[in-house]
Length: 232
Image (cartoon, rainbow, N blue to C red; front, side, top):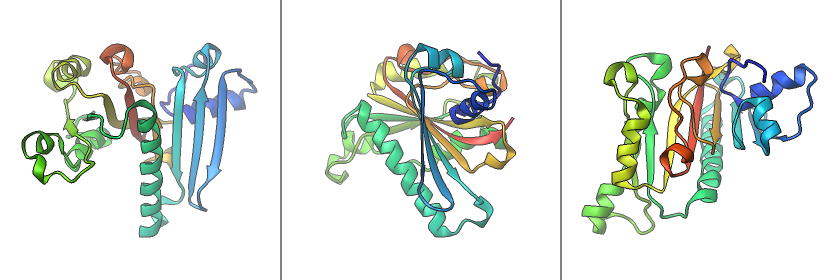
């Protein structure tokens, strides 16, 4: 396997393409939503694909916003709607519309490139407690959502996996959505590329600081990773 230094499945596939390698087990679909918005889907379908790209079998959706500095409010709204649709599609593959979801914000809130997860958690609409204790105030069809920002090993002394194991065992969500920064090879992708995948996440893998894997294999429930790019 090539020694990649990026978390982005699409970039890993591009590296293999430049090297002239054709790999059975990797499928790529691309779609232009508009002049400034593009979706690319990389599907790893077998062990050959896993070994070549260094990613487990599953779907990796990349949303690219071109010329972000010049994006209008309409462009940002369109990108948000596209992200929402792609996320819903992956979630609905794994759980039904009323299943409990735990949103996890990874990273260190005091370090700007690593603060995405905690910042997103602060803006999540939490509903689990309302449904449980004040159901009359929850609109019909509201999904139970809970959230946590577990911090980082350097400040807690506890592996993220260990924290989440305890939460999953007690709260019993049916699915996790993990939000984190994403290491990219390209400075042009900073803040303008989002990857969604349904294979879980290995925190720190893109920059050589690998922590314990968060996935259905380690937590017993599906894990969808939603990640926004920084540089490495």
